[in-house]
Image (cartoon, rainbow, N blue to C red; front, top):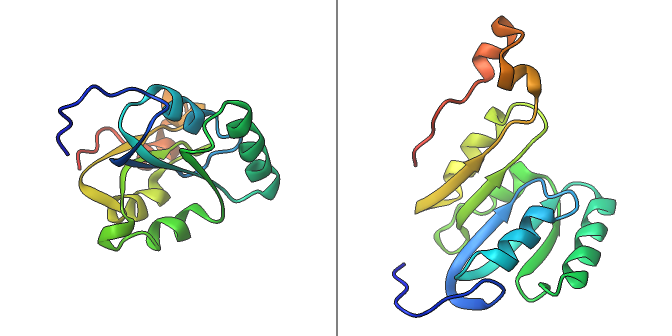
Length: 146
């Protein structure tokens, strides 16, 4: 997608990026994307917890970005596998699980557009620091280029 006009965060673009925050909790990252990333069409802020999705709804309204964020309550893997058809794919997928992200990678890659970006973090310090090297080794993702 080539953007030739001036763009700004917080504005909805019909031909913009479709972003998925898979495990959104309070929706903080989705709100940051909505306010700071230019050329956004839609951000799906997903979480399995109803309490978390209620929190996302409150936070997006409080931050004035409800026109960009769609709260979603459901399993992240199911959502990604249901988004593999061409028109439902995401341009950006944010994976930020507590622990190893490996189990989410297949669904994420299948639901990305051809030139999409997969943002992966792991919050399990044992995996990140490799303090328990043998158990951590199969869980370390060094680089993923899609």
